[in-house]
Image (cartoon, rainbow over all chains, first blue to last red):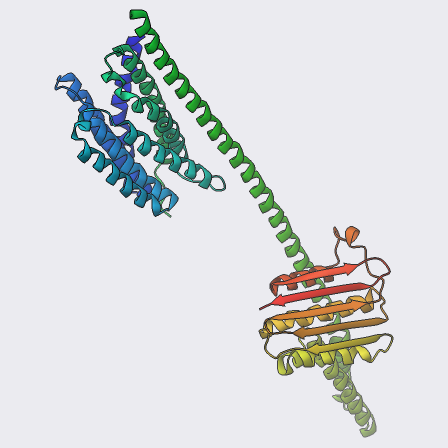
Length: 212
Length: 266
């Protein structure tokens, strides 16, 4: 079982490098939302890669990277949905939340070496709300990025809980197997999310658009 | 102690697992709901589009039929009133060119040609007039309706009461023509098909709106049953009301005459 999950973990890491390449291929000929999403994939790939590097080279804790992961994810997906939904207030909400998170770190610098459950939950749930709004907007007409939207909605909704409970590993009374289980669930969900990103590219962007 | 620790651990894992499953189920429900609503909305939109297309086809069909009928009528008019008469002129002119006719005969033929030419002129003027009433262009809607009334009044088999209170240039001249045609078509329906004996209509403009109320005491019609197979005249009126961007209400039943109200807003 562990071997299988390790395999999935490796697959997700390789895929997270592979997908941006697919999207970069179609970067120029597509719209702003597509470009923002491609940048998101690239940034996530870099963070993933650094995570693995830190673990493999035994450089110590990689938890501080989670803050980069959540902040960039929040910023880029906010911009992505601001573009798709054409709502200006998403940018304002994004700025306010960023100020809030910055205040958390100023207030308690040691947070940098722990998980930040409230920060994770707020940022992930905001993105989930945007995904829901996008579902609503797509009801009556054909819209792009619907499959990715489903992926974002599922992955962020379920993983919000996993990451929010991330600080459990610092609880000495809880063994490592618990956090490992949570990590495994996250990996499976993440693979499903990646699969949907691939389906989106394959269905809508694999064939170059004819310029009209 | 170890057992206790194990229990808390299990509980936490269980709670987290249950919560994640609940979130996933909720998520699936939302996505399915979205998917089915989308399909339904698509279907409704498609039905609506199809209906619109069939309606447009119907309009298109009736336009073509009307056009063909009109052409037929004009061809008939041209043939009866002009071609055949010009034939007589040509025949007479041919006679004149012969050498062995007397002066008296020549005078007779000349008089005949003059007479026929005059009727041809009169007929061609009439045909042109029916195609596009010059009064409408020269003197406006009010004068054109008055003229229409005078023409019909000559026949005297029915009574027409009308009042026109139209502000000049309320409508653009091409739109005035549509309104005029509507009145013309209504009158022609009342006289030709409904055999009405009393017709009354009122046209009135207010600051930003125009009202046309028309009624007769003719045979009327069964709107419910005639809905599927409307006369071309009625379809023509409907189309013109659409072009004028107005609202029309028809109130009629067999043997109870007809009341048509049209309202346009600027």
